[in-house]
Amino acid sequence: MTQTLTTQFLTVPGGRLAYDDTATETGLPVVLLPGMLDSRSVYRHLRPLLTAAGHRVVTLDLRGLGESSMTWSDYSPASIAEDTLALLDHLGIERAALVGNSYTGATVVRAAALAPERVAGIALIDAFIENLPPSAVQRAVLKALAFTVTHVPAAWGSYLDKAYPTARPADFAEYRSAAVTALRTPGRKPVTRAYATGDSAPTGWSAEVRRPALVLMGSQDPDFPDPAVVADRQAAALKARKVMIDGAGHYPMAEFPQATADALLPFLDEVA
Image 1 (cartoon, rainbow, N blue to C red):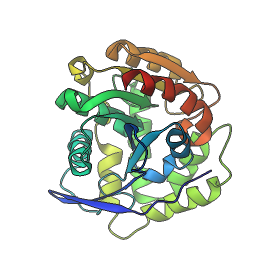
Image 2: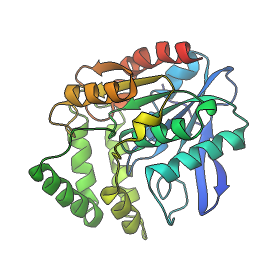
Image 3: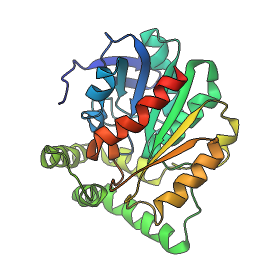
């Protein structure tokens, strides 16, 4: 089951951010951040499971993506961490759990280091922090992928086909089409390039985190040669618990939302 919420906006220095907020629940607030080139709708199947458990859920479109304004001077994970904390201030949320997928794993790590009193805990879903250094071949592949996605938006659709290897949601075709169409929006190319070539896995940030953490990883994530080894490395860096979601690719919250909720909800109860 999905929920339809009214898009709201927050103006911060440099632009306008789109978000939605279930608002009525009284449990620990949870902020869900999508990954690179994605929109907040990637959480459309997980959000109802969290609200059913009593949590207030806020989802945010990243700079330049979704319904947020397009042109910014900075698209880094650190700048998105500042946006996330500004959103907490705007909503009057004193303390929340932060969940980051892929590119925004580094964002929630940064936010926890910047404002530990505001962050109850962080959860990383198939994230790019403290990963094993890529080989020369992997670096070449990543560079080629960044160029291709920037100039040929349909390549992002091909990537999504691989990123959902086992259990695509019923609305996957519609979602995939919308994602590719969004990258074809006039003026989007510099945004795509900035994300595709940005540093999504800065090293050393984890050492500054003193908040509870959870690492979730799909066992068939095509972004990593060995997802379990990467998850172990991240869990060690954050002193976190690791949960592997069997069969999931890079987006378990959409591919296996119930399994993701089953892993996330006990953690939220603990940090609350």
